[in-house]
Image (cartoon, one colour):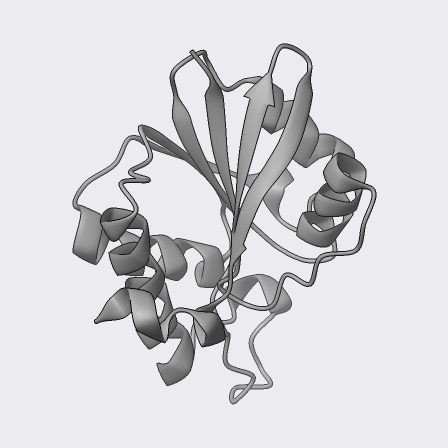
Length: 157
């Protein structure tokens, strides 16, 4: 059995209301659309998470709502330490993935890109709503693919 992690950066957020803290920024219209689009792709690829760890920021929770609008309810844990998490924090969460499990982690940059570099030794762009499929074998991880919203039109038809 293998461990699978879907490492996702939150969808595109709005900066329209300058009175909101960074933690409270919601998604914009594109972000709402991209979150459900990514969920349809995950569904088509049979990458349904059995558990979700999500930052407790408004934009990550709204990203998760977009995912759940397609995939349905998912066991979820909102975590303050995933808000602007370091690569080490994200890697620790990844290491909690059980054999045979597919865990979705929704967090922020730069942490997601730093994890990708840590795992692959190469820079991988993680724009908003990007989702990387990472496969764990024993104590190592490798990247199987990175899904980016702009590259997914052919999978959403």
